[in-house]
Length: 132
Image (cartoon, rainbow, N blue to C red):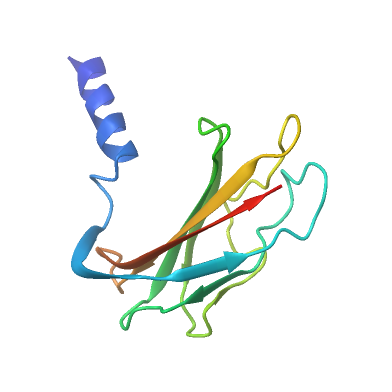
């Protein structure tokens, strides 16, 4: 029974069921970035990420990055405060693992969610992709 419960928790966590609730009028944000390193950058800091059309009331940005070619590898991210300048500073994501494609080029995608002050509501979301 415990292992079955664990499976359900993992499934619901992966699908976002335990995350912040999305508001009905969620805004689409524009997200942009560029990698500033070459080669394996697994231990490099996150690049600066620019966010436009940030909803009013955004206190935090929740950021994650995935390799669209190897979705099983978790590149992490983190949650940072919104200081109002529309930028997620380089190196501010403490759980970030940079790109390191095992062969050739891979496509990486950042997802940025705008959260309210108690992190219970997703006010906006945006994504950006880049090959590396």
